[in-house]
Length: 225
Image (cartoon, rainbow, N blue to C red; front, top):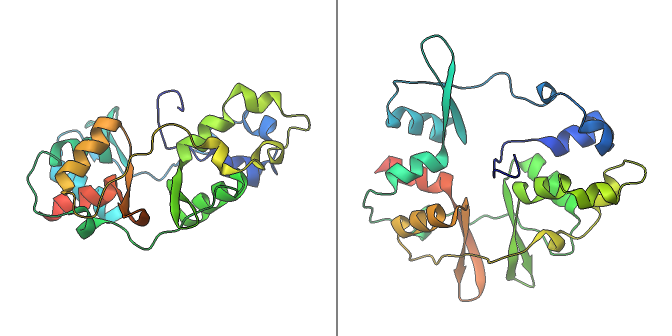
């Protein structure tokens, strides 16, 4: 899943809650242990507007598509919907749709604490801020890639995840940081997210972080027309 960039995998919660921090025990569990069984699906002949309505109202990032016999045909995600809706013209700007009440973390905060915050508050990502300046962005996928890396397992001696989760979160931040401005159109923001294959853009004014705009924010905005 980390190799292909999939984001729906609550592994860290499994490790901490069910196995008391034992990573080696947790990775040998069946995927049935962490899968969501009460799922919302979409019929194969549904309209795009039906998918948008469910995504926005239930805040669901992905919907399995099934045929008349209940057989899985595919999945539609926020990004798929954004790819369609992003072609529509809108007069809205990033400032109109962004989230401005942000939860952030610091570069020296441990990976364990960041993962805990993501689970507790149901965030997929957290801006990393130092002295009111945006340092980077950490995502759930970054943590999953880290947990699944060979480097992590080479450092395990007792098998407890705490051995590899006490590093500062800044060690996970790499590569370019893409941002947007409050007055950029949501059409341009959508194009940038799709082009760069990212799920959110920090909103910068001057050198200060003032908000965050996500795929969900844009889907909701386009859906309102």
